[in-house]
Length: 431
Ligand code: SF4
Image (cartoon, rainbow, N blue to C red; front, side, top):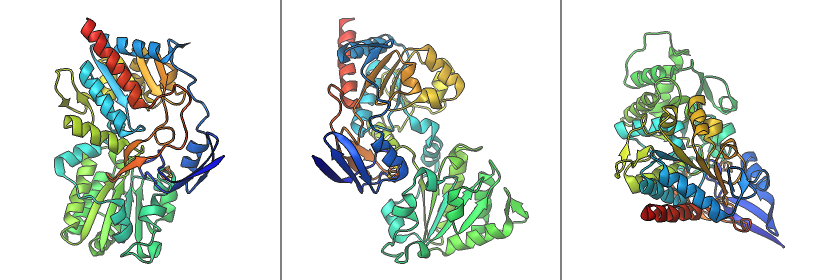
């Protein structure tokens, strides 16, 4: 029997598109509508490369045996790390934070290798932000700085920032002026009205020059970071004259020289522009629920990521308690990885240390991290086999839908984390 699920939420990128149609036959996904290529691939290849069942040291075991092994690792660890969490739902994030508190560990999410510098800057200087709905309905000037939504957030331009006809932008794409700033001309650069090719690591200077021009200062240099003075002055004038402008920014800004100082400069530019018109700033968050991981961690601990419970209360210090730093220093002596693949994506020294310590992985698919883990527990895919809440890149919470049943005995992340916690408590009480 065929069932068509409408208004399904895509569990892939920070756009969190909520208009997908997924057709299921039996318990198999057979068709998608409205999904971009990345999303369609996630749904249609959902059954491929799955983890068959729980393992300890590569040997197949039952779920309870795997949970026991995970709990023993955590109960005896002195500096456990719990990492990942941006590709699972908020309930699982809440359990992970509680587990970190129980074992006196560090809980961190993928922000620490992504938009962590954005969070640091916004904590220091504040932010002017809005929802994507406001962008759709009002923005007539859209800047994409160091990001490439045409390839990484494929429906962003179609749904929110480029093409849609909005209440006060009735002409859609024709009513918006789109600017792309990047070190190379990506597909985004080619669809923009203005492309500024910036020298690598020149963001801080260029942002400061535009800011100076907005304030009415004369720029004496012929070029700043490779961009001619006329273009800088022209853009500053256009920004001041917009009805509403938005700067979307990505890893080109957060991971280049200056890091959080680049965001600091962007916030300063936006603050100056608000003397002339309405302007906002929004990070292009990557994974579909990395914003949720920050939000839930902040609700529970007061801090958004890199939270250390070793003293029994939460402490926050990115650079010290961030996963890469903790691993590269050889400090962590055990790790629980939920919905992430740090062995594939972390720098070599951090990944190498991960290979030396016992790792517990909760995931759907075989990954490099799963392959080197002591304990592996397959879990239901949030947004496909399990419900839950996720936060869109602009902070709007959306309820994920379940369209198929998980394999027999396969539980959602939150339930597995609860089982591990229960067992850790038993071990601690028995000790
Ligand atoms: S743009 Fe992102 S959220 Fe939307 S369908 Fe594609 S992958 Fe999914």
